[in-house]
Amino acid sequence: MKRNLAIATVITITAIWVAACTKIDDYKSKYMSGGGIIYTGKMDSVKIFSGKYRAQLNGLFTSDPNIVKYRVFTNSGLDSMEVVVKRTSGVDTAKTIIPNLEEGTQSFEIRTYDSAGNSSVPVFISANVYGANYQASIVNRGVADASLQTDGSAKITWADVSADAGVQYMQIKFSDVSNVLHDTVVYSQPANLTTNLPNIKVGSTFSYRTAYLPNPTAIDTFYTDYQDHSVKADVTKVYLSNYGPDLKGTLGSDGRFGTLNAPWVSNAGALNKGGGTFGGYQHASWQSAGVITWETWGKTPVVDGKIYQATSAPLPAGNYTVTFNYYSEVQQNSTVYFIAAAGNSGIPSVADLSGALGYAAMYNGANVGATSPNVTESKSFNFTLTSSQTVSIGLLGNLVGSGDPGNYFEVRSIQLIQN
Image 1 (cartoon, rainbow, N blue to C red):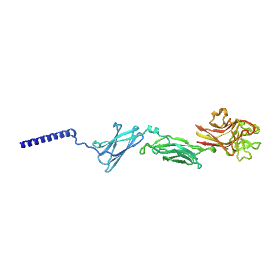
Image 2: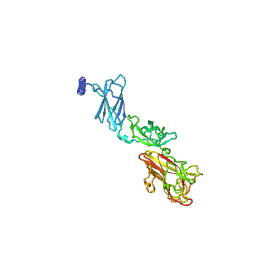
Image 3: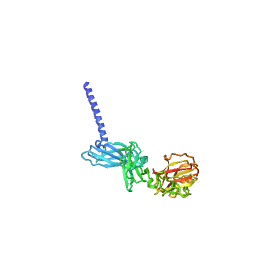
């Protein structure tokens, strides 16, 4: 009985084993009729570097000498590019540019292949691609100040930027005093950055653009458009003459008052002394310097008086500040304006002040107390030129002639600043 049971058990086990082998053989027959699945070695150390509508793939081949090519799939596998590989006996490097990508985050799938068409398991990686949207987001680095120095250089003080803003450098173009064009690069640092442009041509501007990298490993540099920037400079001596201190004039018969020398022009209304033969200038015996003045003691009023000079050459387009430094006594119901006007034919009357480039009132019909002769006040105004042109700068006065103390002031100097 026991012997028959053992035989039956052996028969059962044998039947199960035979059945199992039959299923394995069936699986091999169905799925492995061509032999086992062969995978090539995958690409190692894969990196993707961002670019402008493109990216750069870097990787290594450290094994499998049978690799003959690799493919990079993009756009969810709908697009791909193929790169032929020539393997050596050592470690080989893969490096290729993937073009025609859309801006944004892109995914990449990389597979290697041997000559029989066997592929590796995929390597997946993603990276940002940059384009028009990023370009629109970048701006030229700000200039906090640009001023002419005593040595003839222009000192640029750059606005601070964030360390991760991507600013790489500023490319600057400027002309020197010999009209030689310079093109220079200033590498960025986030804070406390200054640049000196040597021997810059006074009255000129410099042009610059800013270079950006979207991230530290990006393969493409983005640039802003070039932008012109003026250099704040005292250009008085470049465009004006006889501007003080110690203005020059020709004294009249009284030995105190006179008329300003050229290039100043004085109209008939400005000549309120000597019976209308001179006026607008004074260099009295007790004065150390000549000044522009109107004095109305002795009933010598000024009616639509104009004293002006035109710039010796057209001013470049840009922003300007004119400053008049003066001392004054009482102005009774009188007006005095400092004015800049376009052209070389003079300055407007009161009724036409709206047509001036800019102006400031020293007095505007109010009674104003005297200041100490040793104290100089200043009045400034700004104007902007959209194109290069000659400008007339001067004074317009309507001063009432009255008794003592009358009306009186001294303009001691004039300054023209290009901002």
